[in-house]
Image 1 (spheres, one colour):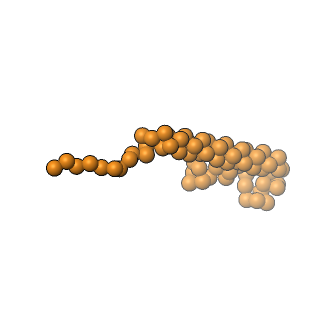
Image 2 (cartoon, rainbow, N blue to C red):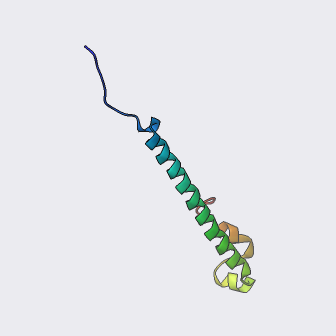
Image 3 (cartoon, rainbow, N blue to C red):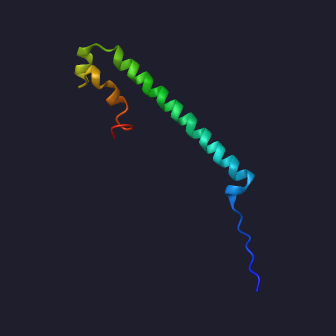
Length: 74
């Protein structure tokens, strides 16, 4: 008795490759947009005086940790 399957592995097809590529490209753009936003936030906080930072409960040496807390210090 012969056994045959009509299952098609999408990871080997051209459409599967395109899907993986477009997904990776989307992740790159998302990472870029997020990093740009974080850099702008760091610049804005660095522009504040020490007194203004203190009003927000921050010290100058804590700015990077605050901005990237969910990425590195989660």
